[in-house]
Structure formats: C-alpha cells, structure tokens
Image (tube, rainbow, N blue to C red; front, side):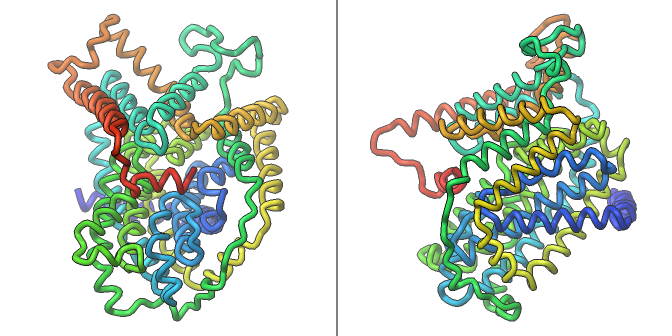
Length: 517
C-alpha cells in the first residue's frame, strides 16, 4: 500500500510541477496569504469571487488555485493575530490570547517563527494523512449503496449546521433553506418546474456562482462596509532575524506542536468542525494539561504553537472527506465541490480512479504550496502589515466590481447579476437577524445529491422508509442515522443545560462566534 501511494504521489508531483499548474498554485497561495491579512475578506469571499475565473481553466489548475487560497489564508491570518491583536479569521482568534502579549514583550518575531514552523508541521501531517487515509475511505465508500450515501449526507448536513457557530437551530434552518434553493428548477426525473415562480431563467436552477457571491460577497461586504478601525502598528516592526526562535522556545513548543497536530487531524474527520473548533479545543487541552496554566493568556509560547499547528492540520485534513466521499465539512469545501461540478466532475469515491490527476496533483501541490508559504511569509511580514492601511472605502467597491464582472461573465446574463444582488441583500438581512448563511451553501451543494440518493433508496426498497435503519441489510446506514440522532440529542441536552439558572457557557467556547460574528 505504501509503495502504491508513493508511486501515485510521484505522479501527482509530475502534474503539480507542470508550469501552468505551478503558476496557478503560486497565485492561489499568494492571494490566500494576502486576503488572510485583510479583515472582512477571508477565503470564502475570495474563492466566491474567483469561482467564475475557473470556467475557462483546466480542472487541475482551478482546484490547485482555489485550494491554495484556502490554506494560504491561514498563514496570513496568524500575522494579524500575533502582531496586531486582530483576529481577521475565526481560527486565529485564540492565537491572540498569547500571541499579542508575546509581541508586547518584544517576542512577536519569535511567535511568528514558532507559528510558521508549527503550521508547516501540522500541514505536513494533514497531507500525509490524506495520502494514506483517503484511498482507504474510497475502498470502503465504493461499497455504499443509495441508503448509505443518503444517511452519510444526512450526518454531514446535520454536523455542518449544528456544530457551526451560533444557534444550532438557526444553523439547521439555514441548511434547510440551502436544500430548498438546491431544488429550484426543472425536476430531473419529471421535468416539472419547482419554485421557479414562472421565471424561465430559473428553470436551470440557481447558479452556485450567484449564490456564493451573493451570500459571501455582497452580504459580507455590506456588513463590513462601515468598519473604520485604526490599527496600532507600533509593535509590528518585525525583522527576519527576529523570527528565529531560540532552542528553549522550540523545546517548549515541540510537544504542543504534536498534540495540536493530532487534535486538528481528528477534528478534520468530523464534518462541520473545521479549523476554528480544532484551534480552540487544542488551546483548551494544552492549558488543561500544562503544569503552569497561569502563563496562558500572558505570553505562553505553547498557546501559539498548539492552536496554529491544529489549524493547519485541520485545514489539510478537511480535504479527506471532501475529495474521497464528496461530503464537504465546511463552506469552503462546499465551494470547492461546486468548482468541480462546474467543470463537469462528479465528486465522490470515483474521483480518485477517474481523475487521478486532480486528486494526486492536489496533494502534491499541498507540499509545494506550504513550502512557498514559508518562503513568502518570512521576508514579506512588513508588506502584509502595511496592507492593513488600505482604506475599506477602496477595498470593498473594487471587490464588488469584480463580483459583478464575475457573475455576468459566467453566463453573459444580466438576470444572474440581479439574482446575485437579491441574494446578497437577503443574506445581509439574515446576518442582521443573527442567521449566519454559511450552512446555506452546504445544503445547496449536497441537496440535489441527497435527493437523488433518497429517491434511489426508495425505489429499491419499494417505498419502505425503514430501509435506512435496516440493521440486517444496511448496518452502515443504520450507524450513520444513529449518529445523526445522537448529534440531535446532544444539541438538545446542551440547550437544556444552558437554560439552567446560574450556569454560563465556558468563555473559550463562546469566543469563535464572537470573533467571527
């Protein structure tokens, strides 16, 4: 098995090192690093804007670029958290707790150096995990029937909506809304129009580009347009020589790197968790097992090493269920699946065998991209910090301009531009009401496949709904349904506990939603 994996990986490097693929990989990580520094942008909005660009690209180059934006943004986000106490993105909110105190102590460069090393360790483990675990998952998934696939998607939808930040009930509501938007258009089986409101333009359904750019482009920009924050950069003057950590710092960070990497890799295998939850869980774990927990929050180097390694391990591991099973664990993964479907590629267990250039080229590009990010981060710290001086009044109108160009260029249709604007305004209203729209995309991408497999299961079982919990003939499906039920029960129990008078949720658990909301 190891020999086969290494042979396939060698083939992947031959794909990734093709000049045009290498160029798009570099562009992806460069853009990702840049938007990671800018608050309010983030990988979701950036990938949404770049999605129309992939129409004219080859599938391998498109996925390499979009994936590079995702994991590249994690490197940029750590810079602002440590040097400016500014959590531009949720996974790095916990890094502020010890990163900024280290900066004020004159050790901001050391914290950045520890972050870069830990990020590379975590990412390397996540990539290695994908090399060996994804093909094993595929061999199991090939035995799945419609009932098993449907139950697995149900688990992914529930996990993605209930484990996300904010109210689980609101998350489920947004997922259901995504499922409804996913069925707009003519029914594939009968041709009957559904929820088209008599508009011929909706017979082909809602375009993922219009939905993504409306929800994560226009809505997020409208929410952030009034921000006028002045950043204190007096501690941000870091030179390259300051980033070399001492031997003592490396010794204190070694085991936190390992523990954070393992926690992140485990969280990546659970749909709906993602790097945010991984970073907070790893920080809480590290503080709990420390002999000197009082140091945390006052400049403990372990408080930077552990969550950053966990974040990057989780980010790379997120690709495992996405590429091998076709089940996205978060919004970015749903966008990447949408990019594959735009190229006419069906994500799922057959992706590795039918499109090995995409799968193994992507894995090889992870190694290349992470090395490029290490090279880019060290000498360009000053440039990334100066980018924060770009006024929002210039940043967002230019981004909206590219949103409109991208939507119109997708189909040369002004109706799609209007639809994107409508979705954006609706998404902004949802944000004001406390409904985060991220689960919408998860439901939209998985909805049509969920419906297709549900129909197949019903046809095979002749309408017997109990086929999903038939432990004799479909034990795997029964397990997935049981886990879904357990997840719902757990959320109800947590909700009842929060209703008890005098009890408060732990502060560390509330921070991700505060940081991102």
